[in-house]
Image 1 (spheres, helix red, strand yellow):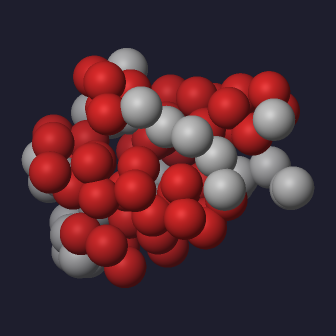
Image 2: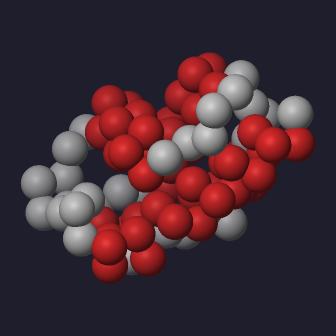
Length: 85
């Protein structure tokens, strides 16, 4: 299984929770911005986790949402879970 990229995260997040127009994914600072500040709530992150589990066949517990606070942390966390398989 290949590693998750920021672009993969953006695609899955936007397909499950919608596009937040103000989010500039090309800006490196966006990677360290909280999902809340980017316009995504905890329900959007639960949907993201569910989609990642389906698409990447990786187990992501519901409480991981409290860990994945920024896009960078989410990608690192999911990639760690992929590597553990």
